[in-house]
Length: 489
Image (tube, rainbow, N blue to C red):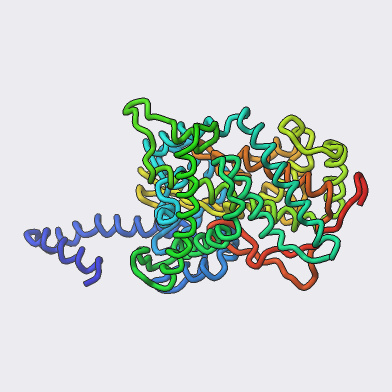
């Protein structure tokens, strides 16, 4: 029996004692109410397509960015059918309300629950008091005085990578820049945040992370969610990748348990005690934080750097400007925290790369209580979605939005845009804790690479966007490295 039919039978039973004319009048109020609900729901535009029952799920799995672009043309608030109704918010004012002004009314939605088999209850997925406690414990590791030490580690491993490139550069052999950036950032995050040498693990952990993240993405946008305990082929592959990652993480923790305290993130987390209970983090809690930091701390930065080099290869004037700046500021040395403000082009290239290819291309929240966006009401329990990919390419806020132009991030240009038109690290209280770390790493790597090499795309190797949990190049970015002399191409 339909919901409507069941409702009618129940209402008729309640009104049985009334005479027919009275019963007819009594029906008018509930039917009017149902019509108003239907009307309000239909006020929110949709993509205009979708499948019966499946809705927009096939489209978002097939071409997520295409679906989002079509949705954005329908309005600033669009209803997507992704197993449940999800409201896409595509105006900076709406984003500001969810992430800042009324952030207490929004929690992480069901997308994040499907990430928990990979990262557990870390900073990315935890909520409420558990999240606030962990954020307090982790925040000191990202203070400015710690970043100074991290800068040296970043420069050291970038220099080692560039030395390793000398052989393929002489031979004119192509490099997969995405693989190189993944290896570099995984090594940097190991040394900087955990004081542990992941270099020997990088070749194994990198593919495992790629596979685990890809399968996690499939789960996020799946209509039928099968728990990881069910031994499907997909779950079996995920379990195999997770075993590799868990082994690496457990080795990190075990090695540090037997060493003196160090002033890095893991050391601080191990020594930290809750002010109310005096308890520290359990091994499982440490595992979740290490896994979250290891994956988020290298995956997103590797993606952003890879897209930056891809964009620079098509903008020779910007590439030369970056090279000349690096030569002038570094003067044959390596970047330190003090010289970063002078690497302005490197900073703007980083920001523009994350505008065009935001690593976190989409994220979601769920309304705890009813909320209102203009004339549209969002009910409690409703999922909302924000896409930096759309915000960052909206012609209302960005002139010629598909063009690579780092000068968009000159101070005078930034002042002319809505604050929430650019959210590569989200915003508000739950802004990414590692945003300063990531930006510093991008500046250092871009400047050091530009000082020694010009990277050129290999013909016949197309670059494609893959919408995994992060925005990554599907089959890598193959480039050749051409040595440079100081201040010259």
